Every structure is written in C-alpha cells, then in structure tokens.
Length: 435
Image (cartoon, rainbow, N blue to C red; front, top):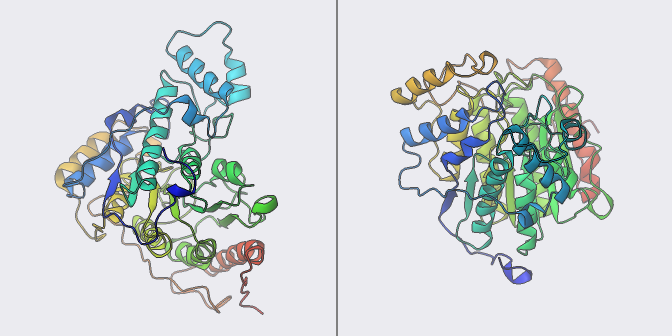
C-alpha cells in the first residue's frame, strides 16, 4: 500500500466504478441463535438487491481475513489474543489458563451483548478485511464508491468488545486511509447508537472529523455522544454529536441532519467520506426509540452520497451497522444503500419480488420473536414523508401538520445544542434563530 503525500487523490480524477464487498462467509459473524444481530439480515439484503436487479452486472469482492498488523492500527495485541482465546474456548478448546471471568471483565467478551462463539476472531477480522479492501480500492482510485453492508462495528474499542462489536472496521479503515496519505477524512454515523468507538479513536486527531447523529444518550446505549463532546486538544471541533429525542420521525431527523452535517462537512473539506449506515433508527426497531421509516433512511443515504459528490469528488465508503428488524426493515434499507451507491436509486413504491417475500417469510419463522417485526414488505418503502422544513430562521415556529409540538421543540433544541457547541470552534456561526 502506498503511503505518504503521493497517495493523496488527484483533484478531478474519477472512477465510475462502485465496489460492493460481499461473501457468504460474512454470515459467520453470529453471536448466538437468539442474539439481536442475526446475519440473516445480510443474506436477505443481498437476495433482495439481486431480485430487484440492483446487483446486475456488479462483480462483488469477497472479503479476506484481516491480519494482525492491520488490526493493530486500532486494537491492542493483548486484546486480539484474548479474542482468539475466547473463540477457542467457545469451540471447546480453551487455551491453558484461560479465564471466562477475565475475558468478560477485562475484554468485554462473554457478556450478554457479546457472548463468545467459535472462530469469533476470524469472523470479526473478516469484516475488517472487507471494509479495508473497500478503503484500499478508493485510495488507489480503483473505485470511487464502495459498500460493505457487513461492516459498521463502530462500538469496539482498542482493547474491549462493546455493543455487538469485536473489531472496529470503521476505525481500522480510517486509519488505513490516513496511512495511504489522506489527511482529511469525514466519518458520518447515522446509527441510532452513538459511534463511540470511532470517536474515541480519533478524538485527538484533527485529520478526522467524526459526526454522529443518534438517539439522545440519556435514553440509549452507550450513554455517550452529548453535544459537549467536541474533540480534544488540536482536534477540538472535530467531534460532532447530534443527539435526538426518542420518537424523532423522518421529517425532524432530516431537518436536524441538514441543519448540522452539511455545514461541518463543507467546512472540513474532506477528501473521502466514510459513512456508518446503521438502520436501527427505524420506528419498528426493537432496541431503539427513533421513528424513521425506510423512506427517511433512503433520504439520509442519498444525502451522504450528495455530500461525497460535492466535497470529495464522490469518494464514499459506506458500511452497515445496527438494525434489528432483521427481516422486514434491514434488507429493504440496505438494498436502498446499495442502489444509492450504484446510482440505481429505487422508488420506495417499487414492489418487492414475490420470491423474496417468500424467503423473508421463511426467515421470519427462524428468528427470535422480538426481531421479526411486523412491518409490511410489499414495497420498498413505508409511505414515510421526507419533506422537511429547513432550520434557517424558523426556530419555534408552528410545527408542520402531523408533527407534535414537543418533538419539534426538542429537535430544535438538539440542533441548537450541537451548533452552539461545535460551530464556534470551527469559525462557523451557530445561527440561533431566536436572536
């Protein structure tokens, strides 16, 4: 891999190619039969995308397992060894001296969120390998955009598993891009949960802007992501957190996103955008309390593509993440992600193929009851409204029809809190419309 300034992208250079990372080996990242993160969501996504012709003519790239030097860009040696040992123990071959208590207490392995399973190192390192392959393709100009729906493990820390995440493929890919010579990388995270692992890794690095749009941390794991978390030292102003109230629907979520994200991204001037596209913001997600539809999630994905096209010559790396309506929600939302990245945007009114619906019904019978959400899958949308009132100059106005006043006010308060915390640090006007 080329390193240094010579590897930086040449202005105006473009590739029409979009790389899609996929291999059925990614289905091996399965914690337990009853765990919320069921890989059936990935299989159903690819099946739906193929059934709709989104992947016609697209040659997918099978991921390979990341080696230890690559993982060391983010993770500590003792943690990688602990993951290997825990996987061996789960497979019935614990190494001498292995302790379940130490694995859980020190490394977060064996908790309810992160139960141990055989070959967990290989399964997690495969995700990293896929996301890094996507990053490498963008870095060398072989692809302008790249997608790994199996990625998005944004909670993992340098030495500890957290929130269903073993290795942080997002952070490793960003570190790899830095090593390739990029020095302005914007990370935009739209998962309902705060992108804490990525923020922590780069909180003191002014070369990386981390933006997370999530449910308010007082109401949801991991309990971080307050607006006041703005970065450290010379990187002050490069951590941006937009914490939204439970119940936030499409129109308010999009209002908030567009009130904050385009401004900070434009000011930062990234060379590449890395997006974590978790879809647990859906109104039917069993683990969260936001109220988006598939239509709103599609609009968010289109907005991130537009930011990449506008600010970094289209260089956009998109990964998956959370999403626990594993049959009814995730496959449709991430099929939209693939379609958006491939410039094959789908109308939300598009019917889903009957053979896919049949396979989804079969899959629904195999997942835990809490995660077989009762959402209609006849079309690629939920009938959500993505029209929204922009922030400028309308603080405190009467909310649009169908939007509760308290949610409108709480969302605007969240917008103002983030703008007030970050915009002055970047030399931007926070723009309080009440003044």
